[in-house]
Every structure is written in structure tokens, then in C-alpha cells.
Length: 69
Image 1 (cartoon, rainbow, N blue to C red):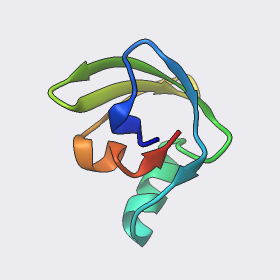
Image 2: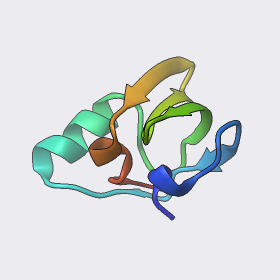
Image 3: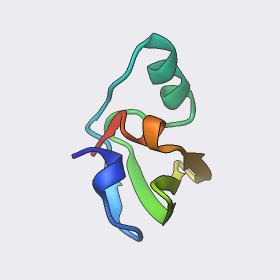
């Protein structure tokens, strides 16, 4: 399931990161790598705020759609 479809307040495990080279490398640099646990803090208009590896990160719909949980 893509990250854009999950509920706020849920804990999830990243299974894969999709996207073209630069997009995938950007997400991996932010800590979105397979096997990492994340927590969805809030959803605002399809955009997400998530906790990943101790940091709070905001993702727009396009980037969030590249993260498979």
C-alpha cells in the first residue's frame, strides 16, 4: 500500500521506495529505506507529516506516493 492511503496516527514499516533515480535517492537520504518503521503524525490535504528515524518530515502527495508500506 502506498503511504498516501494510510491513516494518521498509524505505525508502518517501509517495504520499498519507488520513483526515478533522484526522487528515490532524495527519499532514502531523508531516511525512507526498506525495513524502517515510520509513524504518520498528520495528514493535511493529502500531504503527510511523518516521524522517520527520530525526525519529523513533511512529504507532498507526489513523494508520499513513492513510499510503499
